[in-house]
Length: 607
Image (cartoon, rainbow, N blue to C red; front, side, top):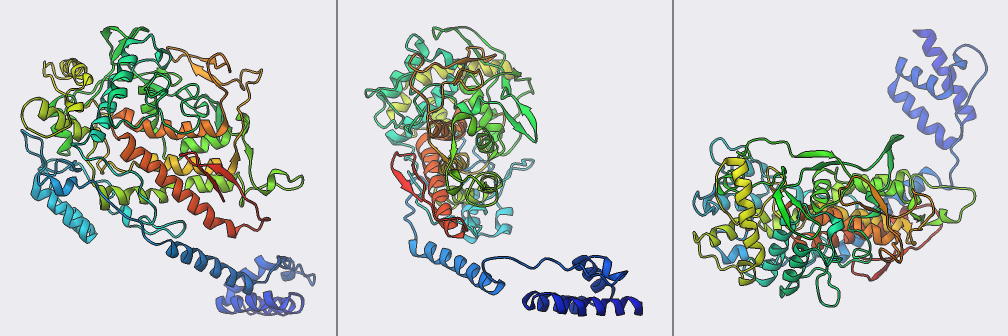
């Protein structure tokens, strides 16, 4: 033992003669602190094993950097303080609501899933709702545990404290504009959002290849949505058309196929090649190309019976018998397929996939490395690992969405709005819903559709006006607005538009570069030919389309609304990403650079 200590002393002495003073003080103090055998082990690791056995000395390389440790510590502190001060100076933003929670004492305009409900009207138990409000006011984990539910129910509230978590990078959860607020349930805006959702549910299985003016059911949907006073989807010549149906008014979103090219491209995961042919869902209707149908299909939708709906709202498992609803692997070729993607993605997986295939679609990296002939990026100011880490941390941004969900709006989910429609149409209640919703053509089509599904599931002929859900358990058990998926889509697509320049997607001569569209059955992809099938596609346009697909895909499930959930979520996510990128800019050691790209509303932003 003494011999080891003697050698340790010699090693430290040699180190003190050969290592620069700033490093010498740090390591000597550390070795002195740990002492004994542990110190000898650390010393051996620092300078090699040779000094233990010979007089030769191997010295650790000296630190080479443009600044010393003391300056680095101070600079790091200043960056953090500056970022915090910049955020503080931006101040708070207004947080208006639609007033429904105050207007309706029975809380029919607000979220109430997993709480007890009246068995006739489906209205939430007011005492239970008030207990939930109390828990929100205290922010107490224990108070949320005390929110009532019916005996035997096991539904849980989804992260009601999520919006109260602090972020150490980027803005705080309540420090960005909230975007469009949910329209009141009795308004024309509320009617427009819900009518569209019923059409999306009814048209889930119409092949995207059939979206044309000769398809009667598609044209009927377009005509009714065009007639709605407050419908805020894109139009051509003032009308909803097959090319704008269920799409967004962002650049590129009404060009070409409804599904983004990024979702049709092959990609790799850990070196494993992947062809994007996910497991599809069986169709509930077998549609003809002209928009008629001769038979129902083997597929299934849920929450179409009142008792089924009530059980799920009360926090019980869906009582419908289990049935197989999956089809073989197919390219996305229907609204149901887009919905399935939005129900099975791993929050940021699609955007990481998009970053992997960006180069093949003509995307060129922005930043100082774009013209470098000697360097490439990885952990700063560019793609590679740095972009992946930003995309991988987007879950922290969803705290903004959770704040507007729980602490602000508490807006009811579309499935709950469907309950209001059904109880009103059945004459059980007298809810003052808008006439454009109550008199809509789609409700007259959805009633026999639901009746068919109820017969298949329960052997009954019950006719309802509930909103059919593509997911067995309906929506997640947290409030609707804003949509977390829409927030993530807005944030991740903004990051991708910042790091990759916009460019036309080349037509190409090889099959792996030609833009694609699905065939009618989803079994293969066909070439999308510029000038014949439609206009040229662009990188940023197709990124906007990814945002649309993953946002509206949740509506296609029956989970969210267009304006109050998705437009709002996209704008929130975009704002947070821009703030984060602005905050990160001073941390880069590379030469100063600027990037300009267009926001979702078309206005340019420069960072």
